[in-house]
Length: 159
Image (cartoon, rainbow, N blue to C red; front, top):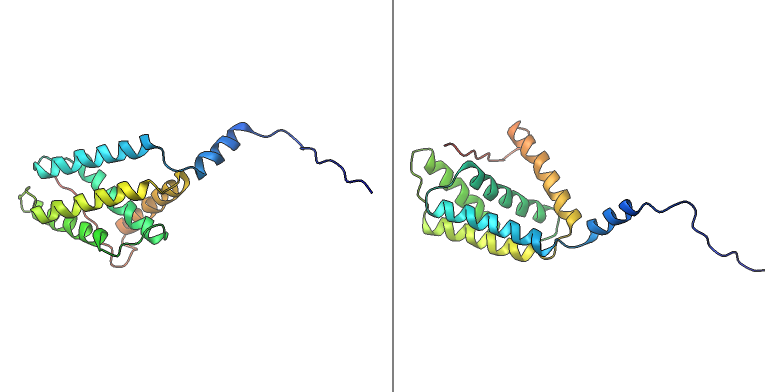
């Protein structure tokens, strides 16, 4: 008995195919460079005591994204870089509420360590993993703002 030759049924949607391929591909060098430049500008502004809400949003988003990558099992934090960056943000923002805009060298070093670690991490993350992590961060941030995440510390920059 002869087997029938497989024939494709219907038309393949090229946009769906492209979207699928993009989802499983690693972040492009351009995407990683844009992130790194934004983070570097934010940290420079913090160092110079000139950080704006946008700068702090970049830093907070990076910390939250790193934390979500950790929750997703994409990275581990054996050296405590993430926790140290979180503590540094908390201390800086608390001090800024008293009118002090300066940052301590140890706090800046913790944020720079996170920047360096994230540059390495983003080289091994796919577009789909980053998108999923960003969506989970948005949902978790909203839940934290609503008070439904036990133990969450909500930091808000005040100008």
